[in-house]
Image (cartoon, rainbow, N blue to C red; front, side):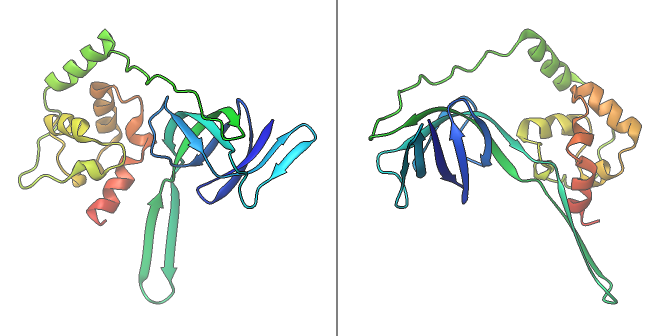
Length: 208
């Protein structure tokens, strides 16, 4: 059995166990989502075409992950106007796995909410070590910048960066390769700073 669904203004042909990337959905990984806009349902030689949707049909899927695509740079320049603009964008997406195609008004089976795994002992140890780490940098005087505006930095990570003496965009803009390596080692980032383009993001936020 297959179906054609509509999500985020796009159409997708799906079958059971298919994994596809759709526009961002407000759902956590492991939860179920139902696509109600089913345009076509087919089973062998029997195909039903909706007008515009197939009545009583739906497609159920499980959210595999929430992610973001690679950064796209948009550069605009006006000749002889001394005007140029450079912006970056990373499109959010949701990866889902189709679990069932329902027809005739059938309802999806209820699924127990996934239990959150308890933090591993090693992870707890790493977090404690990061919290207790001595400052790597001297925080500049004045008000601190909102580091949470950098993609991937939340309140907890901002607190850890502040504890290391990192409080402004300018500090991140001026990171050397050694600085990145030291922060990466202390916070166990595994290349996250370069992978998420922190330096470029900080330049844009600092207006440089």
